[in-house]
Image 1 (cartoon, helix red, strand yellow):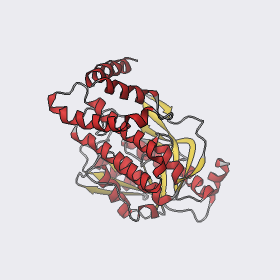
Image 2: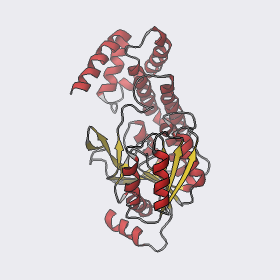
Image 3: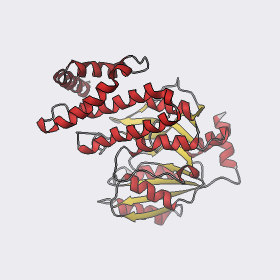
Image 4: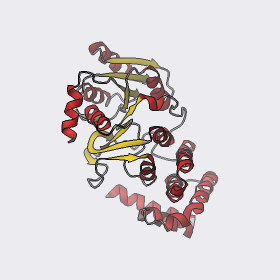
Length: 338
C-alpha cells in the first residue's frame, strides 16, 4: 500500500513543492554525498536550501558549485550562528508547502521525500516521520525494530512514545512538516539539543503524526559533535530541553506524569555520566544531577516501561556517587572494548 501511494505522489500533476533545508558547518568531507542523495530524489518538485553557517574550509565553495550546477539549489551564506539559527534562516526563506531537514553529514534514500509525502497524504496529517539507519563504524543499523509498524498517532500517543524513546524520535531530520507548523515556532538559538526542546511544541501544533516503519534516512553517528562527548556547561541544555518538553506534555496530558519523570531522570543521568572522573570543580554539577535523579527515583524504579540500565544506574547512584562513578567507569571501558 505504501508503494502504491508513493507512486501517486510522483505522478501527481499538482505535486507540492517541498523545501529541503540543510544547515552546513564543518562537514566538507561528507557534504557532497549528502547533497547528491537529495538531488537524486525520485520526487522531483523540491528546492534545496543550503544555509552555509560561516563554515571553514571548502564548504562555501562546495555549496556555490552545487548552486551553479542545479537551479533547484539555493545557497545562503551567513556568519556562524549555530544549527538552530541556520535551520531558522532556512525556514525564513523556504517557499515550499512542506519542509524537510537533512543534516550535512547524513544522507537519504532516493524515496525519502516521496515516501514521507505519501504517508502524509495517505492519512491526512501535517507531520510524518520515518524510521532511520544509524551509521557507525562503517555499517548501518536500523534504529527502530520491525515491531513498530507504520501507523497514525494522535498527539497523546506520540507524546507517550517520545517520553520512552520510541518512534517517532525527536530529531528534526527524518520528518516532513506542513509549513503551517512553523508559523509560530522556531528552534531556540544559541542552545544545543534544540530538537528535544521543540518536538513537543511541534506535536502539539500538529495534533497527529504518521510514522513510517521503512528506513529512509541515514544518520551518521559522530562521537565528537557538540551534543556528544565530554561534559561542558552547555550539556545542561539537554536537561533544560527535556524540562520544556515535559512541561508541554503535562499541560495537555497530566496523566503522563510518570513518563515525564522517567524522561527527566534519563536526562540527568545522561549528564551525570559525563561527570565521571571530573574534578572537585564539578561538585555543583554533580549535585544538580543527583537532585533531579533522586527526586524522580521512586517513580522510575517502579515504572515497568523503564529499561533495566536506567534503573540500575539510579540504584548505583542511590548507593553513593563513588559507587556510581566506579561502576560506570568500568562499564564505559567495556563498551569501548566490545
